[in-house]
Length: 248
Image (cartoon, rainbow, N blue to C red):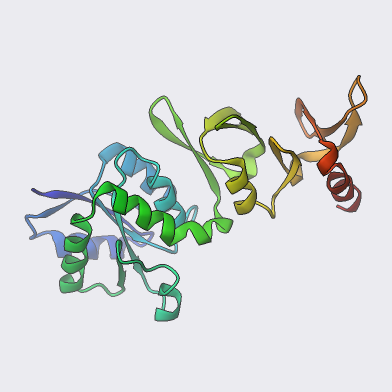
């Protein structure tokens, strides 16, 4: 069976080289290409590749974050990173399940990595993506949500707050809101430098808070820039929130 391959690199020459190396292969066919992580996620949703050959360092969204978002697909592809990084950096990324290729890529190494990737089942792909880039999500730039069957990428700087309700989290952003299944705890860990916990069920963007106010029943609320939503600050988090507002 011929497997579909998505090629992702911000350099056209690098994409052309990989396509050239695969041109004579009957087991693999390039189904699409992308020049950054955002485009890669969209192409993965549209073409459903079996394998993604993806650069790590790219503008807009790097390969690590793109791979993390792809892991949320119903049938996530196997991901092989292509990189010019030295061996010391690759130690943080490599796992048994998904591979990496050092540039310039040689055909023998490419085919070997593709053969390894094609043997992975869905559970192994998910495990590989989670273990590979879970430690690198502090640099994430987007929230990934599924809307009407399609993935939607929301820039972190556009998010006003996250609010949990049972197993779902509402993402309130500048253009509306979406529902995701990511836990508030994981979001707090990943985004601690940009968001502050104000309640056990709410994280708020530090840049969106303009002050504090009292509700009609005397409870403290955050005042948000250009958003009229009223979010209560719990007594447990009140001192920290007050300190943040006072010192920023």
